[in-house]
Length: 511
Image (cartoon, rainbow, N blue to C red; front, side, top):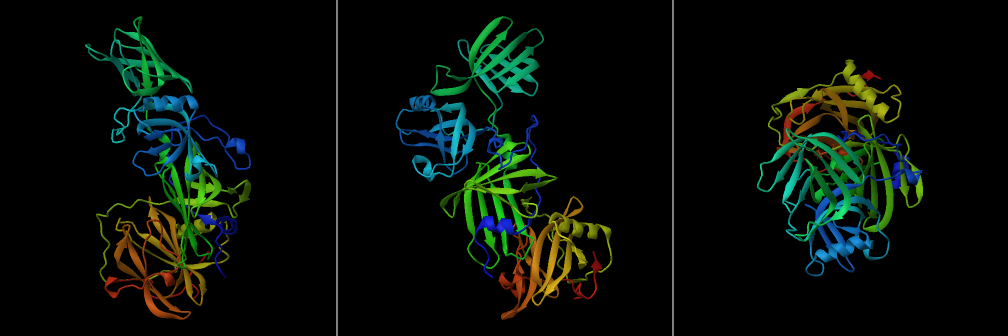
């Protein structure tokens, strides 16, 4: 039967599972969860992005720092005129720190060729002076003015005030009040007290080709100073960025990778285990609240198509229960799409001992092993149904912690099913599922992403009997050894797993 190529149909037909590390975000007021069934509940939080801004008559683009991604800029006519006023020539590149949110592009018009539009709510700074500022370090809130020249910087619960010709003064922030349009601080030093007020308003210092997002008024011992301010240019929502994955728990022959990049672009890749070309979707992501992230795809194989998922943090996992394609909301079956976060494996200083060794599987009950396997069934909303298994442990990545291998009695003419659990904080967490496993398994000498290859016996079904190598993808081992490359004899070690070659059908632990 041919594998379905419609991702919506896939997700309605198959259960997918995984885990993710929870991003650490600042405490925020509790808000009702967003849901695709109630469009008004989907309210993206604004965030700040740094990068290159180009504003002209027919082009308004933003390129984030360190990225080749471009977004169309949606800005007010007044702000567009201010930006063009900074330019000495048409379409001059400016440096900008912009606060806003992303939304879908139109199907026609100037923005149709972009994967997203960035809707500008406020400018933090927009300048024609030294547009190559992306290499500068991130900064906290900064206040400054002239006539006389003065500045103030924040460091935790203190503000350091500096006036030209005078020594810096450290002032404690006694109290503060923050709203979306203002920030007020009560200040006190050894012999000084005062107040700093920031107001959300376009500001210019009159001495540079720059505009800023805040007006500043500082009063110290009845001396008044005026100026401009920029808030911190760090994006706290980037804790969501990373690579996530889900592998089908049914024998469907595909897996899903989701990449959330620092530039807020997103890529979803649907990969086939039978060698068919992958399907790629492109779009964007943004935080809705501290527990939810919105992922919107606007290009399907380079063609305009809008699809949206809202992922909710749930006990260490990201879960999307529904998907919206166009204006239609589809449920995702069997608990939804559940994602693991891919680990960025660093170069291993430890090595795996590849001396000749035979590791036999066991049919002895171990409560920790049994719990890990039962948790796999629980995550996938399925019943063990008297499943039997044999198990062993072996360190695949040289971290000194052994992974768990569990071979199930889900066997057919092509072989049995193998589950691999990684050792995460001394707990076994599901990582990979491999089908069509026959006989023993060899450990390969080669490594991918810090994990050793696994060598499987492949035969039957018209295939020439051979040993095939599964290489770790950075996320998991592939599903099907029969479509993996044939292993080079020189890359096969003498470490043999399941060396006693006993099937769980013959003898195994019963769930």
